[in-house]
Image (cartoon, rainbow, N blue to C red; front, side, top):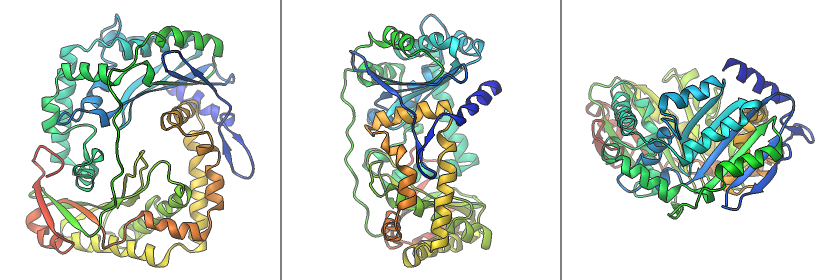
Length: 463
């Protein structure tokens, strides 16, 4: 695959056009609606003989039945374990034999597929995608292996590196009782209840031609690909069920603490957060400037204070994901057990400093430069291009969501950036999670608010 990566990297020179100083614009792309409701997005480029595809099927982990979280995730993994006339081995050999790459996954709102193939194998790529989505083998033996691996993976993370799990506990605690608090990959309890019949039922209810988005970028003939996509997917009927609907969760007032006990732990992993931003937030650019300066890069305020100056941790960051409804705005880090109070206190003090002092002109300009330097490389290859356009379609965004972004970053006023600091919670309104040795840090955590306790060995990610 090194050759594929090299060739796709070469697309950087022409994948985007520039308009104005430093602005990035998507290339022109064609939108085709199939009779069954599927959306086809075509971005032809003739420079190298490669194609990349991103396929989304609306209805992801948010559609998991209650108590069976992880259904969509397991189903996505099953799609490559044999399809059409090919078993799992033959399917993998068909991909590898063409020198291609094909992977499946899931997000909160969609099942996903990403593929990269030589142009001459575009037909093969589309046929493999169609087989996987419409005619997966769903072999019981493959399902049993995947489910066991998922359960074992959680147990291993709890035993060896809880840092992988802090986000799951943080989401479950902040969004308790809300769909965003459910673990997309499931937990040990939910995964154990999922059956192959549950996956088949999910396919009927949540997968269909009316949910399909196919985005293709690279060297191909548009007329030929339109015909191939119609042949491969045009007969896919509608999904039987309704798409999940999610209401926004209000920000929380006051503090509450979840202490997850891992006896004998030598480190404390912690998260401080509240409800933050959403994809359609008009303050996105200004918020990104704040997030970058506060906790989005190595030289951020948080990492400078907690790692560089104090040595309390190897890393501290501030996260600001943007799902359809407001997600979490979180500070995350970890530290030695005996420095738990010092690290959390310093994180809170740095948050207070953000709200009190804001960003000076030099820091703000540095954040602008950092975002500009990161943005173009994140969307310059054909796979990145296919993916970006597919997700625009999923969320119903116009091309200006990308085309105008760097202009918004460059033009964000100090007043707009100052207002955007509110996306991170004030320190009196923190939802806190700590994973560590409760016997040693219980008193410390009680100093931050009312404490609820659970054990790391409990099979769920929320009490």
